[in-house]
Image (cartoon, rainbow, N blue to C red):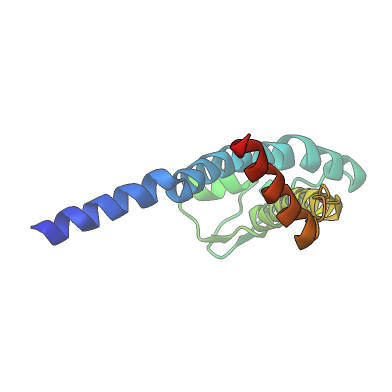
Length: 147
């Protein structure tokens, strides 16, 4: 029973120490960031690329593996046709590149701040006085107590 209490105590220390809490915060922020990047790619990047490429919509690019002709990926999926959705894959690659770039910039900034902190000179501590001065100070203090 005592071993179980010790293990529970150790787990609480680990969880509250910050490791698990920091990781949880990172996951929540990452999930929110992913939705932002997905919207950025879908609602901003793809329309710009569509204008540049003459109206190509990546999210609607697919290969139909079944029978029939479909105007859009949504129509093919509604009909239950097997498809290779390479346009959605291209969107995912664009989103990954954006996330990787942002993370690279964040890590680069953190590393720069660490380097600047390491480069800051430590406040100089005065050198220790010679042993003879220390002894003379002790003698002075003893004489002052005797008087």
